[in-house]
Image (cartoon, rainbow, N blue to C red):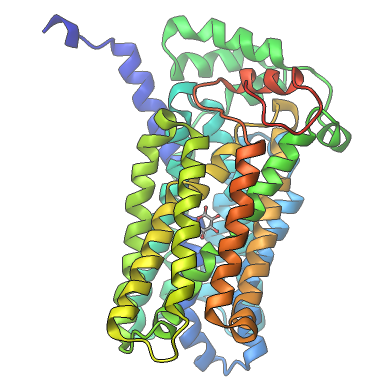
Length: 463
Ligand code: BGC
């Protein structure tokens, strides 16, 4: 029994790191909720504000435009003001956006409110993983950073349920406004969250860094980790030139590549248009389509929980490669399901199973691993800037897919549209195989050193 004795400091620091990661991951909950909520709300907004088709498209895509702008123009904020301060400002923006949209009296007001919500999501989408990555011990970093992705999937599921629950009362204002609650919890929670020790080192505030490290690490780990961060940090300001320099170009290519592949393999055609896909596949009744959509949300959450357990054991690369194969096969099969003009009920359910399998494979691979990887592969001095570039590429691609999906369906038909996404999946698989490094178990500083010692070609390094 003596072997079960637990070292108290380990338990305390472990619980504390987990708690502050979970608080920061509330930003992910807002990301998921606020991107998912529009699907149900738009039906009533459209009627109340008498929106024409184009105006409806503006209201729907306003949030993604905001996300793109938020991610693209905020790259230096987390470097200048600190990761925690940016999250605090973002929480305020989420509250403002939630209340603003809930009280909107016309479509312009509503669209501006949704752009504000989008800006908050765009900044939070990479700042939360950035912060969590910098406070996590290397051995559990995959799990802790991906708490953010878990919260995204929970947020999406909750938004489906809230939309469903409030549909009878046409409560679109509540649908938007309820987001103020998790935003307020995030704001209050951040009062107890310390700033990132790595940011303190970057600001040359070494004593502060030590103070924080002593709360989030076992006592004997503090000095070695501080020394490692200090040794790897060079004081020049991170700049665009730096980001584009030959030694970091591979990391930039990997971040932008994974960003584009995460979206161009079609995940949000399912997340945003699941009922449309299910009805096209032959699920006649409204309630069956809604049930199947809720099923998608549940599968997404459950498999993300599985991913959390696997990321630090199996590693990022095997999961990416394995998950992508599953995504490619289920997309290809889904395409075949659309070949017939008169789908039978059995065929319709086969399509539903393909969609579920596709989401399950995304949830253990590209879903969490894109956001995780971009929080790991960049050096401290340009981490925030580089992550903002990768996140902007992700939101830009997301917008493009959302705007083109229905036209693609019309122009190419169901089978070819999904086969196109499957083909992009094949390209993603080759990309991962050739370029993406394994980061499991490495400290951020070891990963940084890995780039420096690389040859300047684009082969994936073995850190
Ligand atoms: C993606 C989102 C997607 C979500 C689905 C995230 O990683 O960035 O675009 O809606 O996963 O779970």
